[in-house]
Amino acid sequence: MRIKLGPCELSTFCIQSGEITQHLASIVKRVVDRVARWPLLSSLRVEDLYGMVTPREVAGRQPRAALPAPDICELRFTRLHAEGRFEEMWDMLAEDAQRAWGGLQNFVREMPRLDQWLEIIDMQVASVTLLDSWTDHLHARDYSNVARLVMRYRVRQQWKEWSFDRQVHLVSTPDGWRTLCYPTRSGAAAAR
Image (tube, rainbow, N blue to C red; front, side, top):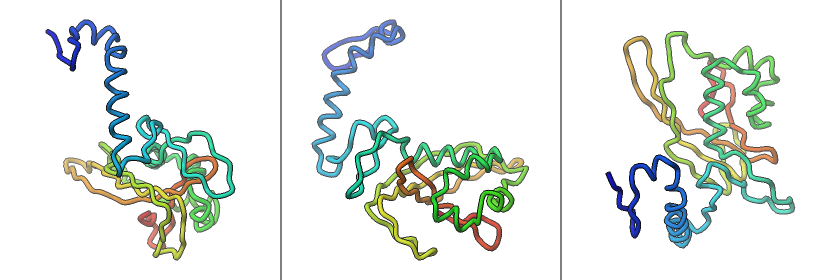
């Protein structure tokens, strides 16, 4: 079996042996160069393609090292929630959210648990939008350098399965992206 990729033909053995990397490097470079010239994607960096982003520099601050992308942070936050590892989630909350919870012990005690019969089958990031600024009208706060994500969850409860989307927001901090997950009076974490 042979696969035709532009000017070269690669055998199945070539692909399986890892030599395809040498052949694809020039193709990938051409695609990235072309995409970077598109007006809507001109600010795209190679780091964005590989799951690492450098949050936009805030005036007066030094550039930061590459941090995990906001989608990676949110997926980890959700995974920890599903596993009931609330202490580890605490450091992933934005400072405003931490203050609203009133401390780690309140967060651990009051963060909603998943029903024992509810299982998250799959979670995906449907979209990521980086915003220069965003206003959280529910909590009357303005933020700069925010990532707005649409998360898609597929869950199962006994024999019933369903999917739903949820919009979440993360803010950039010097040590990474942090989620804006606030408490609510009804005991469920506020949509963030």
